[in-house]
Image (tube, rainbow, N blue to C red; front, side, top):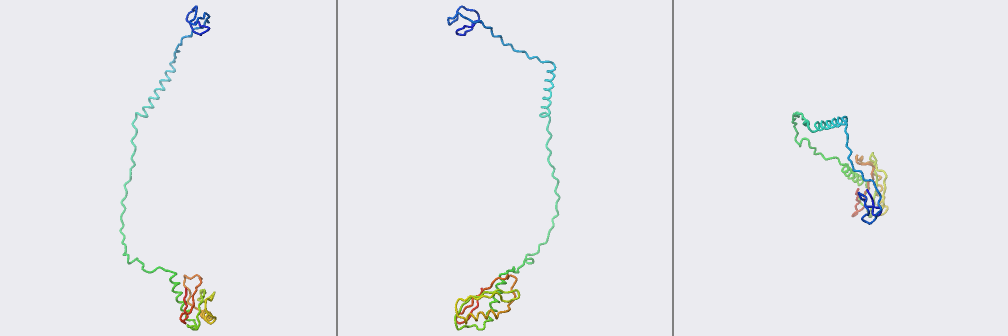
Length: 202
């Protein structure tokens, strides 16, 4: 092979001039023809390949060829029939309780009425010649005595107020308070109305 030194064109044989007009050539070796190398397999390799292919075929037969076992359905044990027991239910009238529930407020309300009557009964006079109005406060001890007595003047003179003070002093023993009473203060308004003295427990 001859290569032109100017245009680098290859020529199979030596020519006098290249197409470009150059007469200088470099001789180069021809490209060797590509030859495909043959793969040589030894008998030992052939045996290994055969065993490998047999293993793959056997695995496929085991996985896909054999029938998979049918899934077992769970067996449900038969339920035992329970004996039905019939109970006699009494009429509602026999078990219904019509009695009213205990209400501590109702017992306190009734106690206030009795306390108001006790205070009024200890007035020396139920009428007054002068108008007056005051507020009283007190507590009841567990043995029925008035304690922590207070008088708050609102209207009237000493004659009216002293009458109210003596009323509280004369009310020494009253009925024992009910269970709903927990030492709270009682208060009452004492006032005159048309010359009469009124005692109203709150």
